[in-house]
Amino acid sequence: MAPLSRRQALLAVPALIASLAGARSARADWPDRTVRLVVPFTPGSVTDVVARIVADTLSQVVGKAIVVDNKPGGSGVVGTMAVAGAPPDGSTLLMVTPTTAALNPHLLRRLPYDPIKDFVPIGQICECPYLLVIDPSLPAHTLPEFLELARKRGDLTYSYGNNSAQIAAAVLAKETGVDLLGIPYRGGPEALTDVMTGRVSATFTDFSNGLTQARDGKVRAIGVTSREPYGLAPEVPAIATAVPGFEMNIWFGLSGPTGLPTDLGGKIGKALQAALAQPILQKRLAEQGFQVAGGTAQQWSTLLNAELQRWGGFVRTAGIEPQ
Image (cartoon, rainbow, N blue to C red; front, side, top):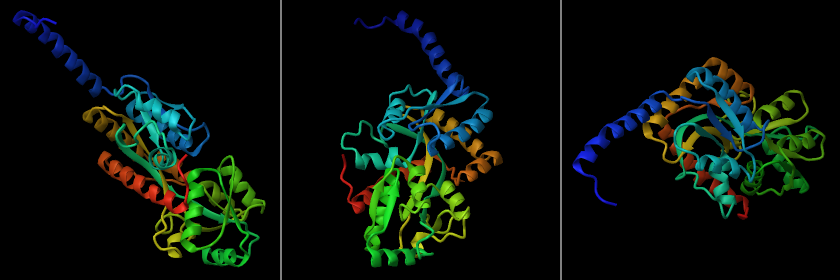
């Protein structure tokens, strides 16, 4: 191609300036269109519930619709890839979960995305622990009593409806030297139901569902996976009290596709923090067992890197081979 003449170059300058001005204006006016918040799991899942709570308040903050777009499949791979390949213009965001960002890299041999390199962190949303509950007919009221019972009987079981619940139970068993037989279920609700009916001895379950059943006497809550007793249920001791160092929380946050400009990511992050500061959002998340986390994009990035390493250690301790 022949080089531009001086006259052609001068004529091109106004068009270039107009193009750059348009891009700056689009960023300044974010969002200038409906924004898709991709949830890589099914409607009604915990990830979906949190996303819809956030989307409702964030829509009010920015004055444009934030639409939840469920793209389940492949342990979150389908939805995550949909964002990895999206234009980096702020119109497509991703709900990031421990499964997609911290577990899949250790469980799937041919993962088609890099959870760190292929996304731009925007901010953390919330976090909560798992709740360890047991069959209330068992003669155990505390975690040490449950572990001692497991050692004596040798036939206690645990149910799990997802990888993280399986890993939590497997790590607990390994670190305490007890034998527990794992039984897979379609999902967390089914795994919890069979503890309620006495078919299974124990399960690590979603905090809100498990606490509701525990307070109704249908299961017995004997521990939370946070480092200290959780603020929404201070009566339940931390597992770390009996098993030092045991900590395994779930968390959610927002990220965008790689290439998202820093200034645009910052604008989205500020809008997210404004939404998280709203009392109505905090109340709705608390009803689901979550506490708002918030923080900067850098803090979110630091957490993602740390959790990727942490869950890798859990997978190795649990002895789970990647598929």
